[in-house]
Image 1 (cartoon, rainbow, N blue to C red):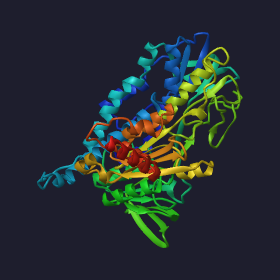
Image 2: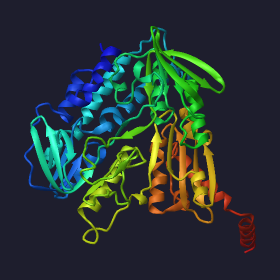
Image 3: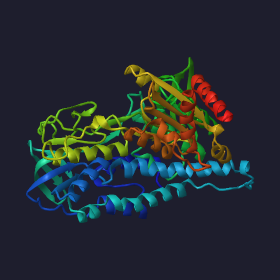
Length: 529
């Protein structure tokens, strides 16, 4: 059994030694795939077409696509292949969220005629073991051995620029100097922490350590009501923790549509999350009874004692220790500076993923890697022409229940850009499948450029919003417009019908009285024939 003190003591070793806690069969399998202890780095193969630093999503995609095209590729990773997504992000969090939803379904089963007898046991340790097992299973896709078989020279160790076209790798099997024609910086970002008085002394969890838990904290304070904070606050509340969620501004999910965020907030409150928003003057003290948080919220002072604190307040780019200055690469607090082609101030070096993007998503890193490949390996005019990050249409989803998914512009974004839009909203409580599923809290909302059928943005709040937003993303990418969705047959009954229903509101709004009057005259003429 892992104690809190042991978790904190060993957390630093995770990054230094490839250690993943707890040390069980699942995590040993994970490490054997993504940071094998007996790995011997290869001898450099002359001048590489591209050398990639960082084996998160952006680095992995850059390396494997380049190798599949016939390029000579080197990939450097000092910690765990797969990066945050596999190890401490998307994969473990979604495993936890799914389990939390199952627990909530059991507690709410009477709505569906299932009477749960008293004494039902819940096993948080089993939840975490399942997550670790599935993560280990998935880790094969990001493994050192798989990428080696795909033609990538994989180096485990710290990579550092030593010149405009050279990188030194410091690994357990000795140092290697790699020469490159092009390079890609894909070192990602790490969890940030606020400068809260007493927080460091009391100790806290982030997404990088919370998935090592084997015991459920009876009381947990969550700082930050962004996607990470909301997803995990709701999950831990469903597991049975007393959860206090603290946010500096009003409400939750500050970057989302306010109506959408309000629906999620109400569900989280029903799940037992205590929300202290507009939190000011937060202080933390370690006491004999736990970790004491004091905060002012809406002109009241709150004094809460918890067993653990989870911080989810943003990301800090990993720019340190990789010799960016020596490589001629400029950066600032937001990460590496790139142009629209993802080229840095050293034209030989590109960047992709969280290290240079405001979109901290796995799928964004994937898309940016594709741009790096085209621009680094097929430079205009010899290849396909320049690819630009500015052309990306980026959807995203927060995996609370209900989920919130979005693509394109919000109404305020369109207004700032001087684009006149018409906004339409269709609620899920008018969608048959959502009603039957007991998942009718939510809506679909679209923004259509006035005078056209061009969709410039969409938001969906629904149990499966992340799966449903893709239809609007495809339409926007293809320039298909609202008429195409309105004319597309959607299977019945599905929650995705809401996409067609919201577009039909636009079509109905443009069926003018004048058009109706003309049609009435046409039909009257037809009757007389």
